Length: 166
Ligand SMILES: CC(C)(COP(=O)(O)OP(=O)(O)OC[C@H]1O[C@@H](n2cnc3c(N)ncnc32)[C@H](O)[C@@H]1OP(=O)(O)O)[C@@H](O)C(=O)NCCC(=O)NCCS
Image (cartoon, rainbow, N blue to C red; front, top):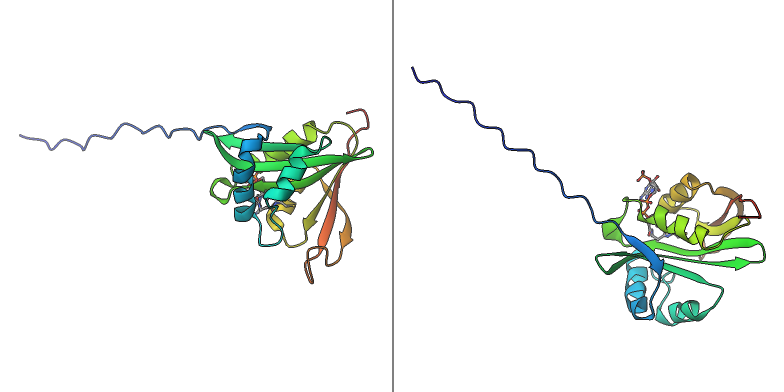
């Protein structure tokens, strides 16, 4: 008697892990790529263009970080300090690589580059993605800025308490 053999199970294909982004200070040569990232990440009028990015890169008090994956710029975080307060000036992640923790990692990196004292930022009220990210990172709404981003586009101040000493 011939018994039909069971179809052989394929060996499980191990999914290749996503490459880990590396975060570090932006290089001058990467600024055009950051400008393209800004244009992809933000709506017209909110994206930083190359001249602004050059100025930020040249400012000694500014912490300007990028996330790179296989040499490609996939995100950026820009921060500075106003007195004892650290400020997140800009945070953007390429739309192709979102929801992989890159924004969270960039935010943590820019906070670490501005040690000590509370952190402060402004986010557009209807930007639910960014607000959720900031809340997860310990930021709390601390005020409103009506029409900050244009008529009907309100801003929300968010603040993260941190000890003065770091
Ligand atoms: C906001 C932004 C930076 C998030 O980057 P990201 O790499 O996708 O963020 P993360 O993967 O670290 O997300 C962390 C958490 O934030 C929340 N979050 C992020 N994107 C979200 C979305 N589209 N909807 C709801 N929650 C979201 C989630 O809680 C997420 O955790 P989870 O994926 O485990 O659920 C990115 O969407 C972006 O560049 N947006 C356009 C530019 C912008 O708005 N910048 C902020 C200006 S203030």
